[in-house]
Length: 272
Image (cartoon, rainbow, N blue to C red; front, side, top):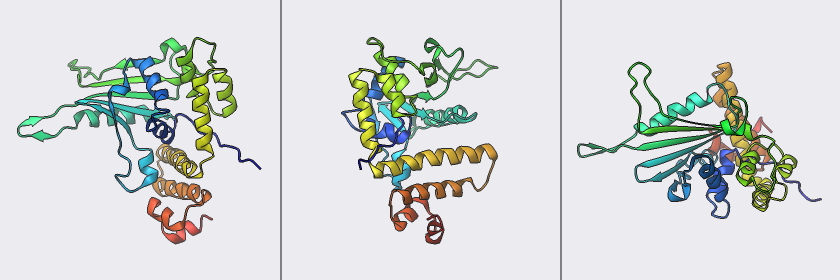
């Protein structure tokens, strides 16, 4: 019996990193960003933090940061948007912009653009109102933080768009909102480039190793968001248990799960 590929979302960090690190598929996100912001990511270097911590589950969904000299582009994929998600992103952008190092008496300033792909609707839901581009300003003294720029792209404004032969980039944005291959099939129609991406997703959906990493990201985000919303102190441990369950399902060894999650052997065995 042929194995059916599970659905893999284009808005997962794990998915984006897999495609962006592959020259055969990186064009998909690059063209979306250029279409919406005029920023050409091909002129930047993707900083690869993978393998820095030894925790493959964590590293595979590490931040997508691009550099060109002092220019930094931080790409955030917000598949799940909660009331504090965008605020959290602002704090992260401020940390990136404020980071520098001392060289003699000089401070090396960085110029940061943070691009948030938000799985959310805004205003009247029209695609023409899907982007907000702004800087941060003190309301009393009108001081502007010039080295930080925020671009919010609201993807659900493109929900339901189908390829009509002329709207390729809008179709790409609509693909980001798909929740099944059937829905993505309807969006793509006869757009060849879209079909290339969908076939790659199906390939990833058949890969048990990738599926484990993908599951770990999804359950981690849901558990953390739930824990924050409910104020539960045990949220972190519940998150690790959820990751362990996903890894057990993928057939990973107990010893590997212990190294990834920090859980004890007896705690993992109880999850079987």
